[in-house]
Image (cartoon, rainbow, N blue to C red):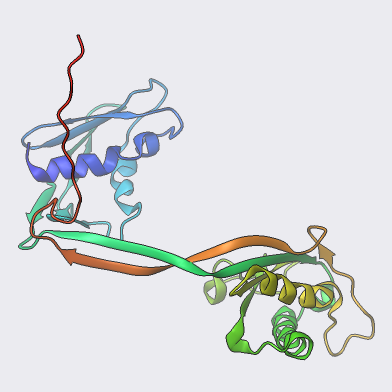
Length: 265
């Protein structure tokens, strides 16, 4: 069958029932022909719809209309999604552009240190009314106390303060305004070894529990989520290779061994 409908159908059915009205119901069946493909759920309680089938091209792709594969690019910019009946969708217009050069994506990761995490909750309305200032003060105080206590400078470890319930997910893109009712503060420390990461987190412990803003005339008590407050996460990894490599043949980069099978009657 043509590469366009074949690649497109393969992309859609990769996640089974995700393109149906009941993603937990099971798989789907795709029938490919010379002009396109039809897709339908295997479960009688689910249905494929044009919107759900088309939307699956948004999943794990940088471009919802074009998806690069080793030997070319799937192009669905002209694809048409039509409901055949209440459960089946017909897709036509998918194309595949063969590349001049076959390529293989090469990825690799390495250990980027060890992590220790602490998590505390804030409901103090005075702190929450100036949560950005409090977080900035926390960062400054942690850096100062780590250097004073164990002599580490900024280039010997790293930490991140994430304010869940405020901006931990969207950051500056969050359109919400005003003080939140409560915020969860996650401290994530990264250091070359686990002991150092935990030592930094322990130094931050009293700050995560009682740090006031400069204008407060009382010592707040915040709420740790766990006891002990420090949770050792172990090795942390980061991508260090994310490349596209030219390949002379589709299998050139892969070691392949063949063995003669022994037939058993």
